[in-house]
Length: 225
Image (cartoon, rainbow, N blue to C red; front, side, top):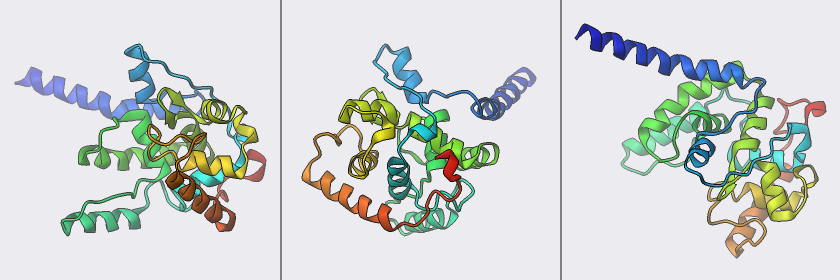
């Protein structure tokens, strides 16, 4: 029993320390997502070209923030008001949806798995708070835009932009940015280059909101965009 207890404590210590060590490493090293690593290990194609945030169109930065996390610059990794709302729905017997911030999605992409379950959502919270503490907002957004999946084997804004529009992510128009941003919730079914009528409608709404959203990138200086 003592040996089992020691093994369990050591395993727990590694599981707690590993995200901290990796997060510190990710302040300077471009990370791979857990999904990218899984596909690489299983021999599936992965295309990702890491580019710094300043080489990603501000149009896409704004569109993604408006679509995925409009309060990105205001919270500490977790939007607690949104979380409380979804927990309330759960207790009412309704299916909770949303509440994931960009930082929480980065936590999932880097450290967790893609299946939707409550354990993963619970783990996202402390990991997102860790990321927000160690990394700058700029770095969190930069990582997100470089590891998000935009299609089977297509990861990051640069690969997505070149795949769907034949141009670098730096040159995306507002319309193209909105099509990419609204593809993120369902990247396998939504093709930004050949959007369905429903996808076009969502992209139009996103573009309109991005135009009137104010400075949703206020936590990132203009020289860093």
